[in-house]
Image (tube, rainbow, N blue to C red; front, side, top):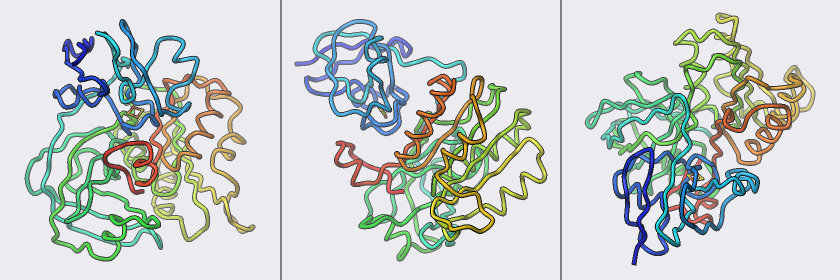
Length: 345
Ligand code: FES
């Protein structure tokens, strides 16, 4: 048995089998439905339920608030239809959908960014060109490993793809990257995915907040904004635990000296004294701004950081639609949420 679901922006009607979600069926049918985590955590697949009835279980309040649910919004990745329905994903003025590609790449560079983050540079051998928007991610498969999601740290158009892989406890893919991966190895890359990308037509201030290896998508976003000579102020905060977790801080400090609209602030949560700003990164942002009306925020890092920063922004006047967040869940967190493949970041 199945139900018909009409997807308004795509002008497509799909047959969703009993028990299946709208998003998984739409993606299988080749509909480029906006999505991110596929596990009810990021809000990227948020949609209007125009008509019909769906059930939803297992999602976070961060992805869909009760108030949004009461307004008829759903998460397509969690929505199981109970009758023929009609849905429409949220429109934005500059929603961009790039063609999905499957690339064969070769490892062209490997180095240690910190004690637990490896920087991997890949040359595209076949399947390109690879168009994406700054801030998006790809599904990356290293030899013999499960696919994992990693954000591109390079700007769109660079000949090399760059990923930052943080070693996680018990993470088999990150252990492979840390110990076994070699220059010259072949890597499969599929993407791009994700809706937390730079909105290049927006002209209000940008608040960019990265935690740990959340540096990767924010590096791409900030460098792209500078390359496009976007005129607004860009406030880039980078939160880590201790000094040994910092990386690329010299690079962004140098960029801030060169571009007067870029303001870069590293924040260390476990530092004792010294010259660094200390505390949680979202608290530092809160100390610097009384209100965020007209700003756009780009967030990437641990879920607890993303959720705390989102609450702060909303409390001080930022519209939810202006918060573009990429919460990095571990493979274990993804598996417990029922996602087939997961980030190991
Ligand atoms: S909440 Fe549905 S894709 Fe993330």
